[in-house]
Image 1: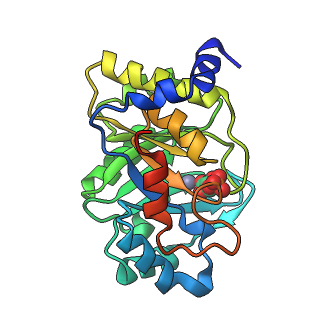
Image 2: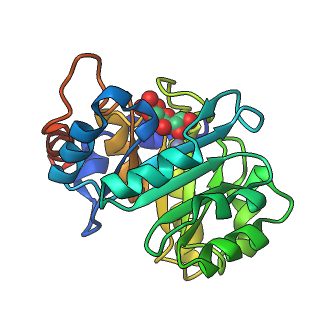
Length: 244
Ligand code: DX5
Ligand code: ZN
């Protein structure tokens, strides 16, 4: 684990005190939702003020899993007014952005590692009125986005290797969040948001927020607990991550 991560992982309360005025946005991960309870789940997220519905799209090739298809994403739009945050874990995302018909105000993230032409895909997302987000796997260096800063509205830091819910945080990614925040601010891009995805538990969320995360993807570590009702889950999580 690098020094910065050790420092951030070690300091607990000290780091969570200084969150500044940032509003932390919550993005429940719909791949973790019980399909038999979708109406109740969406009602609970609406009640809980979820800023996004995180939609994990997986092709079985870029990641060793298959998740959330086009029709499901379209249906969610008819069932909920919460904007989609579509996470494309697919090869050749450029061909597939149109399938999801991104709407103004939604986020679409594409993996830097999934296409030789990230600018082209990011531009297409913006031309459709949606917000463009570049996603980085844990091992992908921050410097990879050096020539993409004018093409993005956010960066998604994977804090686990993408593909499955229920994995453990990769410790070095906490330092990576902080390094990314400094990298962006030093280049005059304070407005580019940081989303984190993977093992966002309450203790990890404190460290991620202290490091600079703006949007938290909530899965089995946060709200989708076995036999636990989702009603009030977002409100409880928001309380748990607020200033101590
Ligand atoms: C991972 C997925 C996320 C997330 C699920 O590929 O993109 O949805 O990990 O949350 P956890 O990690 O808490 O189960
Ligand atoms: Zn995701």
